[in-house]
Image (tube, rainbow, N blue to C red):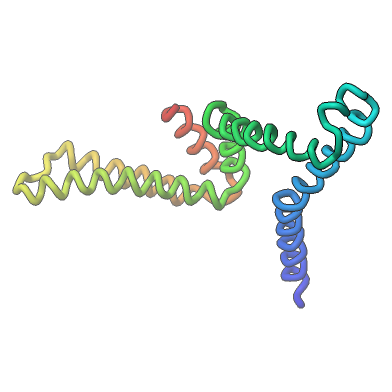
Amino acid sequence: MHTVVKRKLFFRSWYYFRNGWSTYFAIIFAAINTLTVTYYLAIEKYPNLQNVFPNFIQYVVVISIIGIPLLIVVGYIHYKKTHAYQSEADVTYESNPYALRVLINSELMLKLNLQLIDKFLQIMANNKLSETELAELKKLQLEISKFVSSRTFSNGVDVSYFKNLRKTKV
């Protein structure tokens, strides 16, 4: 196998391993570890707590009944009510040129399509485009052409566009 392909396979495998571990195994192992440590090192040592949780299974059931809904609420707040997830998404787009390219291309296509639909509707209604409207279309065409020809995956043009887009949308 070619060295680049081997290296790529290694890093892809490493990526899949990390995601599989962090998504599926780490949470389970962390939960089991936390429950075991807290019960056997804390609850067993205090008689008052042992009266509330007489055995490990009851402790796991009670903590699960309280903890799972609580963690769902915390996850909801993280995604919907704070700027934490928005910041994570921003960092992802800023650091992944491929995802950023798709986002910016869709923004450009949307802008162009809205202009074209407007002009097509005018043409279909037998209204000739004014010189100002033609100039706007040519300006948009020139702006997009310059942007597309000047950017690469590594020169930061997409990142700059994204940051300016974020400033104007928020």
